[in-house]
Image (cartoon, rainbow, N blue to C red; front, side):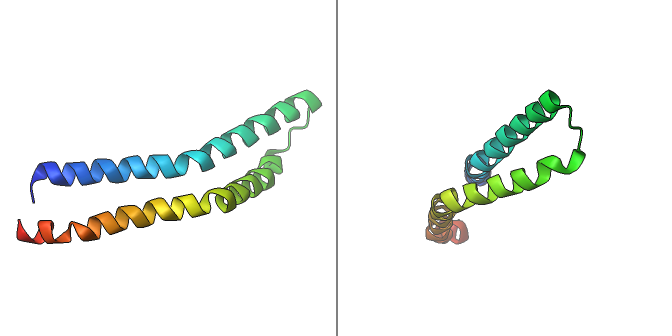
Length: 90
């Protein structure tokens, strides 16, 4: 196994993490932005007001995207296991 192949695997793993985390982070960002705009307009300065809507929105996004996320992780794992012979042999 060469240094280049390790770097390729790590690059693919990092890209997969970014790709799978992006929907959850974007939903959380948008909900936080909407709540902060609402707090500014209504002059409500409650620090804990953002937590429950963000948690619920991330939870529902995870329910919606969970099948896709699990499929991507499973495909990546199967690809790694299928290349295992190449890692051991050299």
